[in-house]
Every structure is written in C-alpha cells, then in structure tokens.
Image 1 (cartoon, rainbow, N blue to C red):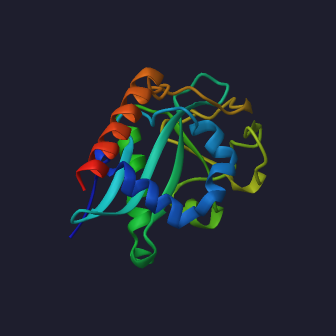
Image 2: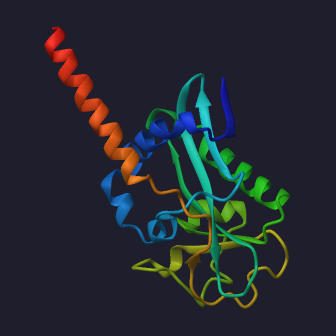
Length: 192
C-alpha cells in the first residue's frame, strides 16, 4: 500500500537516490536549485510517498520571496520512481503539497515546470511575468498558483530564498569522527 506522509530524517538517503535516478547530475545545475542551496524546506512541507519501507516519491516546498511581501513557496523537486510512474502518484503528491501549504496559511506557490502538467493543479504564468530566477530558465515554465486571492499581485524581481538555513557541520566534529573511523579501520586490520 502506498502512503504519502511527511518526510523523516531516515528518508534522506533514499530521497536523494530517487532524485539522482530521476534527474541525474543536471539537477544541481538548475536555477531552482540556487533557491534551495544551503536551506531547509519550509516547515512541515516535505512529503514522501512510500510503499512499505521503499521511498517511491518526493515533493518539497521551500520559502521564497517574490518581492511583494506575500508568503510564497517554491515547489520542487517532485519525483516518482520510474517503475511507479503513470499511476497518478506525482499528481497526488502535488495536491497534498498544495493542500498542506494552504492549511498553513501560505499565500502562493511558484514552480518551474511543464505548463501542460501543472495547469491541472491551477498553476499558470499569468502573474509570474515580472519574476526572474537566479540563473537561466524558460519563461513559459515559470508558473504560479495563488492559495489566497491576490497573493501574487505585485510580484516582481528576482525570486530569492528566505527559508531557514541548513545547519553546517562543525569541522571539529567531522575531524574527530574521521579520526575515530581511521583508528577503527586500523584496529580492524590488525585483528584480522
């Protein structure tokens, strides 16, 4: 049975593997990635689709600014495991993300994606014409959806990240962990 639920820390490796399979290394070159770099997803707005213990889908929302002061989110990436595509799972995840964002009081969602796919969820380019991404993007693929009427009115300029910064690892802790790992490897070699 497939379940769409909030992402957990234990899902991290499986989610990253799914994104690598779905988008490859090019995902790190996308303009939308500039808005996610070194940031945490919006609070309570990271979702996983799981079949048993297997992660088969992901959708996340990120806090951004569209220059008008409204609470706006960036949707993406949305990915579904190759052997699970065509079953409506991606659409179910997008609908869940929209519903959760609305419930939390966010005003709008912006994304970069295929208009032919996202129009069915209410996304369009009607109010994103004065917005820019931090890097190359296709204008027709910059879409928005208001969750509160008028939330994208006056949206203009460069879209910027506003979300919580991801914690950076303490270099001293990393060095200490590396030192312990090396000692354990050496001890294991001697014992063998």
